[in-house]
Length: 74
Image (cartoon, rainbow, N blue to C red; front, side, top):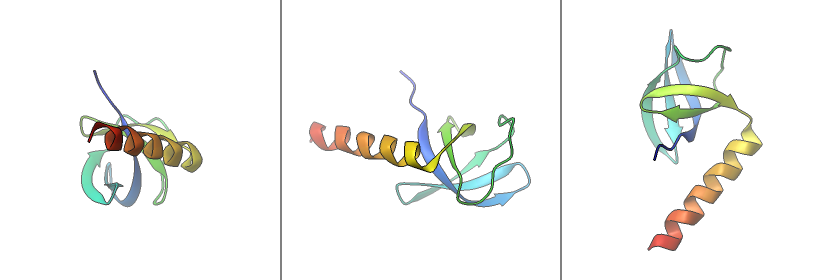
C-alpha cells in the first residue's frame, strides 16, 4: 500500500523544495507537478516527489486523520 502525505512547502530552490511533514523537514522534487507552487502551499508527497498540490484545509484534515489513526495503534 502506498501513502502520499500532505506536506507544507517551506523553501523552494529551482525544482526542489524543502517540506515540513509534522515538523520533520525533507527535500522533495517538484518535477512531477504540472502547476506552480509557492512557500506555504501544501503538496502530497510520495517517494520523494511532490505529486499534487492540495488546499490547506484538505491537507490539515488529512493530517489530523493520519495522526488519529497512528494514535489508535498504540
